[in-house]
Length: 261
Image 1 (cartoon, rainbow, N blue to C red):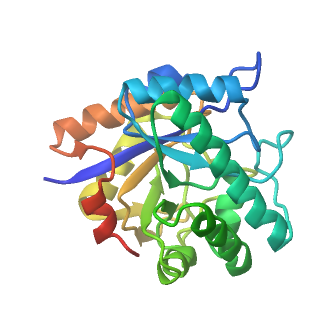
Image 2 (image 1 turned 90 degrees about the vertical axis):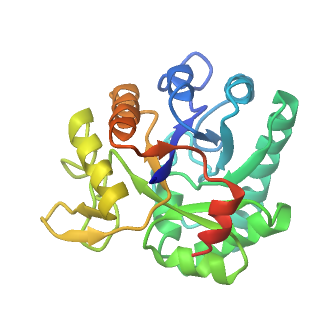
């Protein structure tokens, strides 16, 4: 039976400004990428989401990003290696402390936004994030873009890597994500998303924006929590996967060990 992890970016509300429907998403996903305060989120809100995730036995990941609250972490930046290593350690450590207070544990790291896209192919910044992870807890899994150079780089550095695909994002022919500045970069229709992800899980292929068929090996699928139709998309994915015999579950130790690349 085919199986896949379903993850979402959560804990991104800031004070009185809500972002997404975290509670509804926690009832659907199997892994939660929790903001660490640099691109979004505040400690009290993050702690609340962590407690709700712990109640549901959801796997927790540190959603580390650039220090960019105003730009929601989606602006390209070029921090020094010292800054990026330190920022990575700082964010993971903060979430580990909050997770302990919530009765749960951080099990993986998924970089956010511009940082995620940059380190997919930027070897220097990728090395900095990898170094930060290894410095604080080398047992943490790195969640990375399927097919990107960072997968091999992180594996060679000794990290366990889980490859990820995006349910609600359009792909370029080279396997990268279409820039959010371009029309059609985010897919909002739940049925369209479900059809694409069913094909990914069963055939390991998706269609790029130019019509190119590309191969993607992914063990986790992301639905962005801030997408307006996020909850509807996630629910339809679960329903369609169940109808087709696809099991949705968090990536376990056995899966991580088999996906070192």
